[in-house]
Image 1 (cartoon, rainbow, N blue to C red):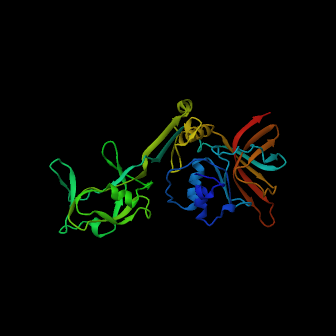
Image 2 (cartoon, helix red, strand yellow):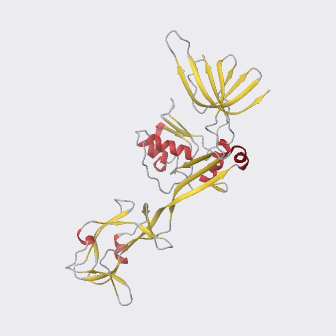
Image 3 (cartoon, one colour):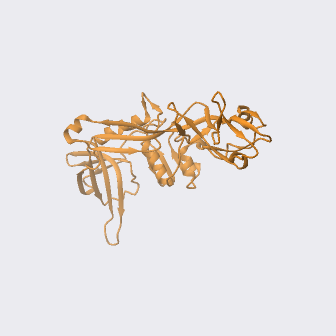
Length: 350
């Protein structure tokens, strides 16, 4: 599951944070009931958490009260908190105000491309096919095991990489497999003539994408089939979603955002897959072409935090937005200055 503080042992957020030495009590998070079939962590801890927060539109922060906060997602089970204003700036507070266009943020086309993991039904995930291989009169393949011919699978811990065959009879690698045959089940699948084929080494727990085997026979024989069954997870390449605002494209030309990531999913929210819903939300937000407000004040707003919603009341104008960044500056013999970058989310002119 992406995030669940009631089951931290199953929570991806907790698992990643644990690598940084954070305990369960160090994390404040919402419950996002999305189960990802397979995730391979290849980046540093903060990068992985940031990618996860992007995919589920979460607020990721390291505040004072908790070392890590991962919350405020439209996909969470808990009701979203009321979007109240945490602070109102007035003309008496502000000594500098600048309004600039966020042209670099504007997009009217969103293209998402994901390599999506898929869980398949239990099936054959490995079959022995090493040469030399011969054929019977009925063209049935078999593998002769003779004392004069020593095969790799007989003398070493043979790596049996898992893979499946597609409808076009092409092989496709498996990134993870479970519900794998026990040694007894696998030996029960052996088909041979002569000999006494059996596994002297059978390890399907040390690796998640391959087995380590040693197959032997005490007397000469012909092996017709050696196979392992399990439930595989494969990667569906280039699963994509493309959306655009035709009106905006006609007016401004194509301004595209290309996105990729490993945490998007086919979990259904409403009547849409999560990755499709994400693209819809991203496009809706990007076409608004809002402004960035730079506010400077001498007030010591040490309690300010990124993501908080604030209001600006100046003269006969009211503006509102979310704090995107801020700096607090204090110099000897100089007045304290707090500078806020606020992304405008709406406002009314009186």
